[in-house]
Image (cartoon, rainbow, N blue to C red; front, side):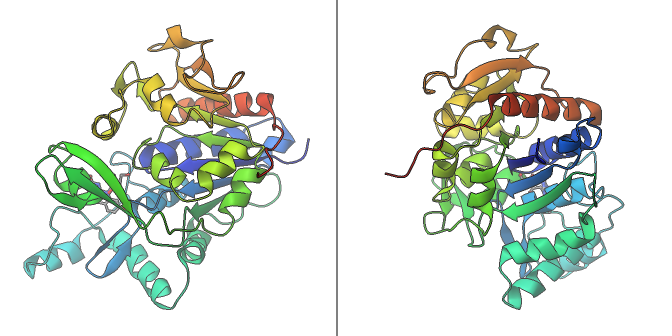
Length: 344
Ligand code: FO1
């Protein structure tokens, strides 16, 4: 078999840990086609924000730091061994926001990113430049990974709140900790956004497209909202396998439940699967918490597609994450590519 191309759509922490597991699985595989695999992660940029004049891309950075071995492991985002001299100086000047922690090492990334954007580089080129440090080409016989922002165009998720306000996603997520119920989300700029160079090809040409257990509304949902992305998955030839972020009706991490209630979707493995019903060849649910669903189909999926498969989903250790990613990949590769639907 030729070397495998795997494309994943990722948000922040859940996507990053799944991808780290995927790379560990591939690196340890006895199959040379997997050991030489190319992984492309198409990453959500709807969480991006400008603070202190700096452009900040939390999900891209979370994935980059996690795969580069630099992430603050307990926190899940930001750098380990971090210090906060600059933010305390900013606080002394009374300039905010004081609810969003920016460490000194992390600020270095934001300064360099903002500099390159100011020089006119599109975000995708900037990400490539940043990743030269964290994700260098591993060479023959090892899996490689490339990060692509979903778009070079700015997209920002805004949250409509039950009290009538509309705030940036980070303000709702970090400052308010989703304590004020949301009534809806608006991805400002998404309708006019173009997929970044390479995104549609990565989705169409993949041997496997994986949807990690990222937030289905504000992470994967935002990427799918970029014009052309959903269509590339629905009509292209790549098998699509998703992993439920909900186990036994509960979120494992983050506040996806608050996002799901805002859009009127039940917090359950099948509730989330319904958001991808037109795309999924298979949907992994937790064998312990949702094992009874094994062998059923995702409601709304086309006949013969959307098979529900139970596997251990908890990424409680790096090995568990590698096993989960390997299981999702096994299902996708066993499904194989399907005939592409020609554009009407
Ligand atoms: N998350 C927090 O809960 N508190 C923070 O102060 C915070 C700062 C931060 C800085 C840089 C960065 O890349 C991420 C940061 N995050 C923080 C995480 C992040 O904002 C969210 O978890 C994601 O946007 C949701 O995927």
